[in-house]
Length: 390
Image 1 (spheres, rainbow, N blue to C red):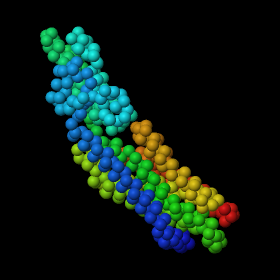
Image 2 (cartoon, rainbow, N blue to C red):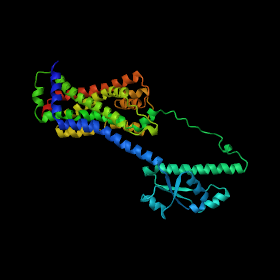
Image 3 (tube, helix red, strand yellow):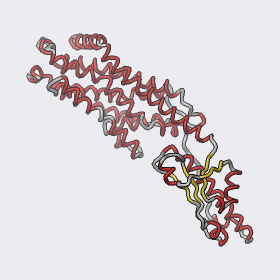
Image 4 (cartoon, helix red, strand yellow):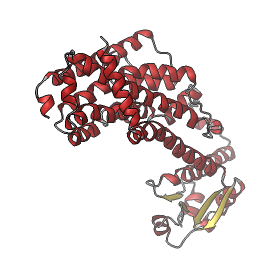
């Protein structure tokens, strides 16, 4: 029973000696990703907060036809500017964010009591102008509502009669659930760290040793094949879990510096939540190690193993991408789908939702069974004579 421990220790020591590979898998894979994510997110939040506090600049064309509207907009904080001669071209060239155009028919429509048309010219494909367009539209709609109420009062009609139903929105979201919207890619980045953390070692200890001809004397020892393969997979699992721990720690560190207080959100990345996520990801780490060892054993060369395992990185993307594009209501049967169940549970943990013990056990069991099947398949390749030939 000591053979697997000897193989485990050998692979750990050799991987620690390869500092460049260790740096790539742990630093750039596990630490750089969360910090880069936090940096980009911080820039976006700061930019949006600055835009919300800036004065609203409204280029207006045809303002002479609606002086009361222009004066009302100025009283409510808008800075009226002269619109370019060609508003469409100016928006296409990004010289202005939007243009408020008051058509020449506005005075006639206004005096006749018709709905006077006011146009907001903008480019919906430009995400950086959404807030300005939304603010301008809100001001114009407020002006229209106020004018409509005044017209009804002049005719002796209560404006409330036009609102037979008053809809009141009562937001039941929590700061944690709103913060989880920002962390939509958290499950993918966490899973990716597990796959990256063990990828290089899985390639080297199988395809790499086979090319260096150091695997053959190891397999010729009078030791059970499962102990040799098990020791190698345990070494890979160790570095995958180290990468996972570093990723979670970097997420906690990076998110502490984000200016989210004014947004009314809070990230559920405290110590208990991170420990829960780490435990949730252990079956995923087992599955990643099994799949990577199987792929490396199946490959004929070191380079071929690198190619296959690079494609394997897309596997954890699928459930996270599905949850980001098409959110679903968590149900019990979903806990039987490996990877998807852990991605769903991580998302629920980041929202500070209560998860039943049965769901935890079902998710861990289904993913662990898949991991054992992958490990058994890898062990089958280790037993084949072709393992030594490539």
